[in-house]
Structures are given as C-alpha cells and as structure tokens.
Length: 122
Image (tube, helix red, strand yellow):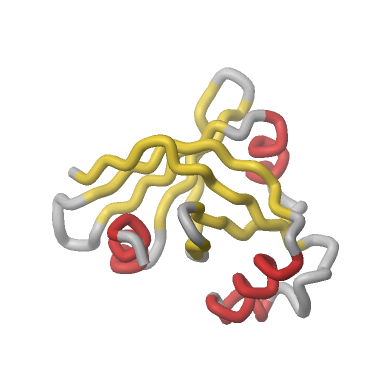
C-alpha cells in the first residue's frame, strides 16, 4: 500500500474535486483502492460526479486526518474503468459497497481509474 493510500485510509473519508463546467465541485467519498500505481474510485450513475469525470477527467483528491493539521492532496486524471476484475476486487476489498451493488455487473456501479500526476503531503 502506498503512503498516499495509507494516509487516506487513516482519514476515513476524503473529498473528490471534479470540474463542473468552469467551477470546481467537491464531495465526500469513502471508498478507494490501489492497484499497481493507480487509485480507483467507486461511484454510480445517479450523481453528477460520474458525469463530470466523463466530461473532464481532471481530478483532485483531498484528505485530512481528524484532529490534526495533516492533509494530503493528489492531483490526477481519471478515466472510467470497465475491467470487471478491478470492479470485483473493489467490491471484495471495500465490502461496504456491497450494500449498494450486488455484483460487479450492476449497471449503476461505476469505477474510475486515477492516474496520479502529483501527490502533496502537508
């Protein structure tokens, strides 16, 4: 597990910042995994996050440890992932998702692969 993913997991939740036209849009997320050098985020097709990521893959992930001033910012580029094995691995590793999605083939279950361009620890 990378230092960045370990930090994010210690935070419990994190914010994903996407572009909504000309303005940033941030929202809390809770599920993230790492495969190789990429991070993966789970979402669904019933929110604006997936539409924004499809239109403009530029993304930031921001996490802050509770009761500290320590925080992390990852800048990257996200693309939708259609790899069934990755989607199943996500469900297996982050079992809370199983409350929302019965299988990797659920048509509302989406996964985005994030290529990390820059990681900043503060």
